[in-house]
Image (cartoon, rainbow, N blue to C red):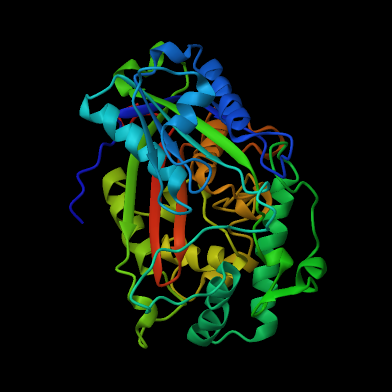
Length: 396
């Protein structure tokens, strides 16, 4: 890839995140106001300092007016972006690169989604017309292909695969139980996960992430200005986005045991950040566990596990809260919930809390490098985002 990166040129100096869940009494505007207010309070500043805003949402607003109306902001540029489930990450990328370019001194990235007021469970959207070659399946069905493909590729029987997927769900629910902002805060047992009603393929209810409402926000400035706002800024090491061509889903040789867009995205991010050994250098990772087999496959695509060994690393507890590389320490999509436009920023919010020692009972010991992975679409037809952030600048 040809990206040059902007390592340590931009820092996040404030963040806000609402509770995620079935927030029937809260509107899109309410959620944006809460996230932005908390973000500005975090940075000990006011909305007047913000030169430009970005808003990530898939279906909860169709222009910058969604944000400017909610915040009563007049005469400021507001850019509304959408990149499927990676919309929150796309919002952050826009704000960060605008500051890095020198176009603005201070920018804010926001993300929001209201999914629970539609009368339906899940995503409600109309796909655009195409040439008829796209595969129409539900999200659970599309991601359910990962499990049997992985089993076939690496020789796992049904019993072992079920144990692996249940371990991921149990881990993430245990982490979410310690998070006051999480949608689901009750630990679950492996038996509960394994015996839950089937949704698609071998995936049960507890293999699927929650459908939630929520919002998050981040305030970004040039790195040299960061300490004017906070003693503990978070420095951007890398931001990478890749999009597939959408045709691999039609390729008979393609395997659902892999998501190539993620591997390419991760390689670019590691190059930008100067990371050689992600399993050892990354302190925590927030990944897009929309379904339990997704997290399993991501461990290999992100270079945390060798090919064919992700399943055994999961069972060995490598990615548990007390493991060598904690993954989804805040509960992930599985337990925290997944309001589309807010998820990418929510992932950054956990790194923010961890670096500042504010994660409460799930606080890790001196984390220094965080990775976020946000996926949009489905295997064979997706976009991928990988962000890397640090507690200190590289020469710090």
